[in-house]
Amino acid sequence: MLKPDRFKILVDSNGHSAGDEAMMKIALILKNITRNTEHCWPLRFKSNEVGLIINNCDAVQALQISESLMQQINAMEPVSLKNPHTADSPQDEKQMFNFTATISWVIWPKDDDDWDNLFQGNYANLLDNWKSGGERIIHYLKNGIKNE
Image (cartoon, rainbow, N blue to C red; front, side, top):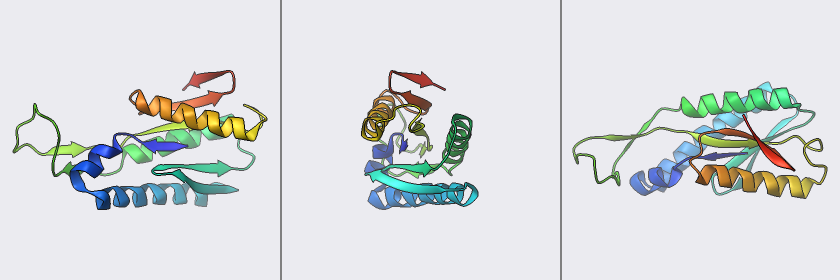
């Protein structure tokens, strides 16, 4: 699962069309990963939370894909904010929005054999880490969280 960091800043400054454009670029990244990964499907969970389901994926592959996904999100071209909400920057200075994301991954049934618990726990983990600053990859485990 992936959630873009600070996305509200982009949308509040540049409008929903800027958010839509960014989500299309993220969707293209996911699509390219699915083309290069056997038995892989991109998903949209809620709002701007997206992810991949990969059949027969082990932890090594999940971490490699997560790291590649993070690198590709970080490499997205920064966007100039039209209406930055920072009081300490000069009005004529352009503020740039750099893309980052929070990623939380799991292996079913290894990390938890109850699919619903695993999904809900991973989603809660994603949101908790996103709210605390994001820009990280986390392996969610039923009995704890392993930071990567």
